[in-house]
Each structure stands twice: as structure tokens, then as C-alpha cells.
Length: 78
Image (cartoon, rainbow, N blue to C red; front, side, top):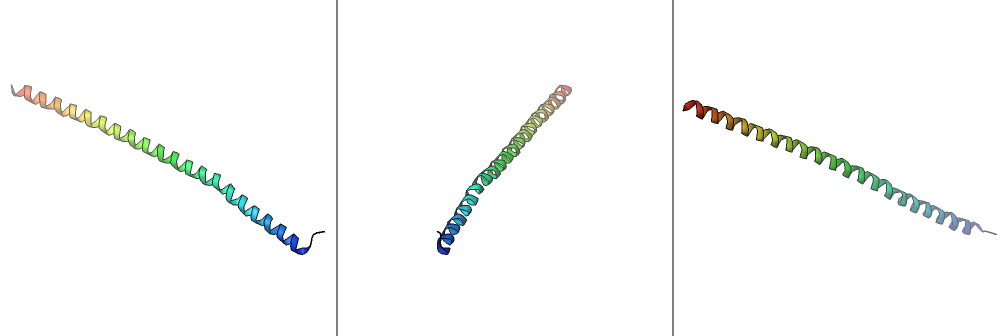
């Protein structure tokens, strides 16, 4: 038969194990939050890269436009 002290020890160890389980189950949650954050960051930086690439294309088009205008002005001068 269990005494009051042994029941206390058992409940104490169960409580400790429950706390351990709670801490262990927190790790996958934190990992999923970290994965979500990293995926979000990846999408953000890919969008930034696309925007910069578009700006570079527009800048290239602007350079071509002004070079064409310079050529037209040069040819009109002659």
C-alpha cells in the first residue's frame, strides 16, 4: 500500500514529467515559427530582387532612350 509520502513523490515526478513534455512540445512550435519567419524573409528578399531587376531593366531602357536621342540630335546637327 502507498503511503502519503510515496503518493506525493509520484505526483511530484508526474508533474515534473508534464513540465518536461510541455517544454519538449514547445520546440516544434518554435521551429515552425522560425520556418515561417525564414520563408517570409525569403519571399521578401526575392520580391526585392525582382524589383531591383525591374529597375535595372528600366534604367537600361532609359540609357538606350537617351543614347537614341543623342544620336538623333547628332544626326540633325550634320
